Length: 375
Ligand SMILES: [Zn+2]
Image: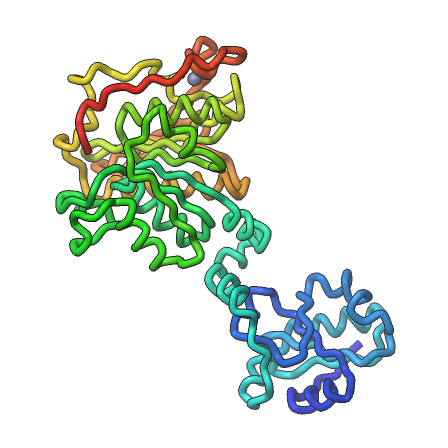
């Protein structure tokens, strides 16, 4: 059954005479507007939903897409369903615009959403439902430094609705070699405020909240309130153990990252939600090392790109956890060595004797370890 085609100009006249103009493009294609008066019904939903839009099979229906290909297919589907008076608009919305015919402005809020996230929306694994999940998500990032910078940038860009940043430091010139959220002009400003500048400029849809105090056992639970995922970008032992214990207690997934010189590592600790099935950080290292053995002092030095690599792996895990995609890095420790450019992975099993996450074990209370070195 061949489909009749009509020019945009003729379609406009038919529409004014009462024909139904059906825009069969995907929602993310509406960002630049739709033919005035058209009703949006994506092609895959035509068969399923046309009866709601046009219950009368004798009604005249004109289909329009971007360039006139998909509208032909949609018209064919309509004919197969018994709609007798159907035509496809040749050249689609592009020709409609070229002919100077009236357009309906897309709703601004929606237009921003669909245009900004169009590359996510084209992934069937994300789609509009996934993007809305990201928009509803709240991610806590502890540390707006080397790891937190790339992670926060990409999570804001990806459309995470609320980012809560915690950092008590101010921007220092020596940070700028790797902490890309900050700028030379913002030296001396609190890192949280500097980060909020950068993130809001990138994506005004993301709400940035901040804590400019040191994270301790007194404020950690308030900080994690409502969080869907927690990202440890502080890379120091007191915060690492505190976040681990809080995430086990509050049943939140923790995305861990650490860097040292030319090497880094990343993992997901999900023992809070999966007691006995997934490990926590204390399953690996029940106690912090003695201060003199602590390797992560700022004096040790780090290649500037290293926290970029690790922070972005952390951000990837955060997005996967929110979207429920793929296989999280839970129960695995991924190690990266920049010099030979090599990734290695080791399995991590939960410790049935773990002081914090062993099943049935009562929460032992928080410990505020002393900070061994600053930065
Ligand atoms: Zn554990």
